[in-house]
Length: 422
Image 1: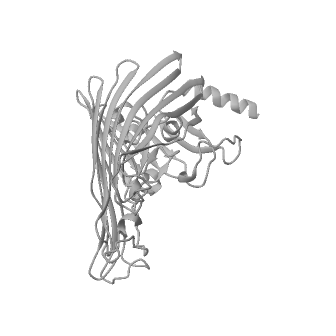
Image 2: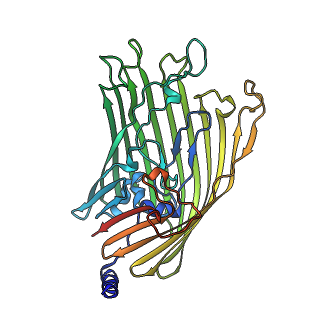
Image 3: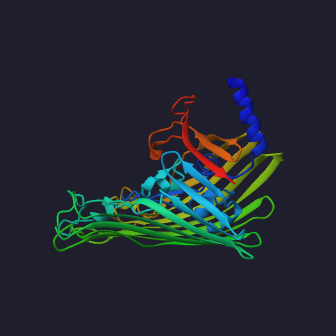
């Protein structure tokens, strides 16, 4: 009986199954762009885009919303985290809504550290600042409050060219509780992000900005508030010609705060510059090999903390990615991705041994983390179940896609999602 049921399921999938791009598990396996973390004490995490610049995937709508017109009728859910609904109208238009991307964990990497979730996290290294009287970091932490439950809206169309717009919003507020010490005060945190994108004659430009995003604590003292602001700007261009996809991207990131009793405003500034090229080789029916090489430079100024030697530096990363994806059967797609950094180094403006003096630039190599990951898509008609093998966990931030342990148990799937396309 079980054998007949399995055969029936496979036949149904073969008859009704179609091809469509996966999402989080696929990107986590195949790879994306480097994620940069500041070294001067703030612990700020930033990436250029959420998705992939070097191959097509549904997740790319988060930096170029015109991609919604390529695959516009589907619903998707991610295990324990997020989900969205996208619908085409009148053939030439589409809209969508996506909720809880990243689980509301602002600036926290998940999916193997390749995504940065939307929102603003109140950073104690920024909002505490340096004490005005002593000039050293404050030890008492100001109350923190991160944004929650991000919601994102999409609108796209094809009116001679494909175009799209994306708005992301997250918010949090408290006027009561142990964190509020001033009867007339409150703690709020809000986040707004906007993206525009297009596709015309193989060119895919995109632009985005984070605006009006701020953490504010008016209850921190009777005569002074604590504020932390986030500003971002990113722009880029992909060009698709046969199997080739060259691309460029830029992101300007600034996060700063004036903390309670702070001597000066603490800031973290990053500028990401990236250029790369990828190639998609079809080696057999339903089997593709993707190759990517890029050059990324990140310029960092980090005023937070007292680690002077790590505040100002430039880092250079040359990543290499290879991924293979193929249809093992009509109802099963398998994929694997490997990545490594050909070059990964930081060039500091100050020496760690003479932190108080300006000295000749000091260079250090960074080992990086080579990865090899495996995933799959099971197709049950128009329902696709995508997975990334690894050590699973109760929260996405704790998944381990690079574990050397292999086994089919409750921890087999580090990432799991389901989507229905029509």
